[in-house]
Amino acid sequence: MSLPTPERPSVPTITVGLRPHPSTTPAAPADSASPVGMLLATMYALPEGGAVFEFKLDGSRLDAIRIPLEAEPGAADELWKHTCFEAFVGVQGEAGYREFNFSPSGQWAIYDFHAPRERNMDFRADAGPSIRFERDGDTAWLEARVPAAALPVVAPGTDLDIGLAAVVERSDGKLEYWAVSHPAPQPDFHARNGFVLALATRAAAPDGKR
Image (cartoon, rainbow, N blue to C red; front, side, top):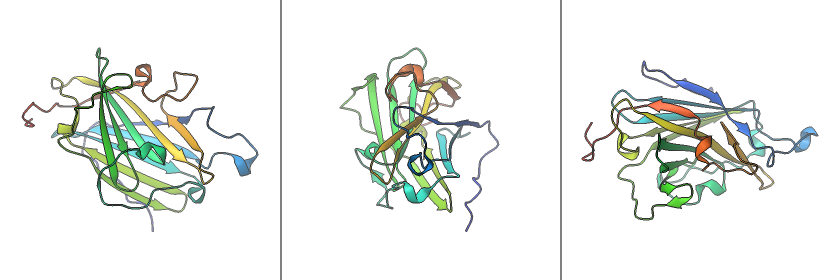
């Protein structure tokens, strides 16, 4: 078996490498080092609205990583306590943002925040992402397709601030925190100055139309 080649529309894509926070990643010797070889993330906006986030573990010891088993797709909390891939989406100049959790199990979560870690408890997602997960040998790949209705509403063509991250649960139960940027001494995916990528996407109107 070989992993499928992602089918992508003819739109600009951004691919970056995530790096581990040094406070949570073991050093040599090799038998205690991180099981992650390389962790890549790709994102792109869909022409009809929405966005796609892809995460790829390559050259990794997957048998040393706890990967959640397939479950009924749908919303679930505390996915970040185990291996989970994440996207943080904010509007430039605004303190608020949304957090997306994508589990290899097929489950997901969307949280809305007024400011860093100040959650809007009244927020309920109108639509959730569709998740696809594949693994083969030392490679695993997750694709999350986020509908426009789940993204912050902005004017068409506006750049959204993006932070991409992942939690990797090792077989010993310890967690590693990977991200494009680690601006704080301790792992903090919610730090707004860690949203260092930009994604220009069309925004859904309040009625869900585009």
